[in-house]
Length: 358
Image (cartoon, rainbow, N blue to C red):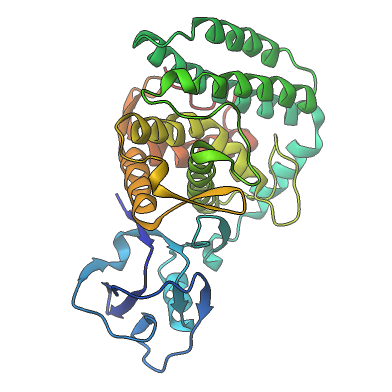
């Protein structure tokens, strides 16, 4: 399996033949920005700021890299983009504080006309769009219900909330419009998030989801985790030649990867939420790991890397897919979900059944 590469600090990235040398630069003041840097040395792809490296480096075969994620403090030259394009490696850019900024996608993955025409046809057909949207929301709600069921079994007093969400799941199945569907889905998520204080082993102030800006440490973790998951979904969408701008739940909009939002709904409960439960319940991240800026709570450097390590570990974890009777990593399941949608759009399968935890 290929690896995701995460770059948090000043890093010198150089290439020799088919190998990348990643050298970390320590003890520099962060510049909190991404900058295009011209360098005469063609083998240097990510030149560090101001100083040379200290020998803290590792080598990676380029063919082993799935995608690169950068978090601010990055300068790169044209050779960087040339090499990422040549080796078909997408690059996702985040601000220093974890906000998703955008992606560089190699031209090879710009899409497939036949698939995109099918996407547009299904989106414009109210009945077929609603069918896909209902299936995705149904799968997402089943996955968050599974989370609650696990914690109810462990003693959390959330049986009443589970019954309420189960009732909303029945309403989702018979909803008659995307707007009605979104209303039921929003109610289910509000109830779900209302259970989190009972799930945490420590006293945490979290009552509801607040996005802009993320209020409190849990909202901050959700926003950061969701941004990571969106970028993973974007990578898999491009690799399967789908158009990320044409979704079925979320409306297409300027600079908005609607389909990535759709696909991520299925995997937020089983990837992002479970990472947060683990980090909080094991005391791996607490309020001291955040700084407050303009009413938003933002992760410091070290806990941010800790979150990414747990996120990557969860992506690589293997689960049993009951319908396929196979063991697959969660990252593989995201790609398979995209292929599943492609097969449905192209008429190769009659029914679209998104992944849900059995």
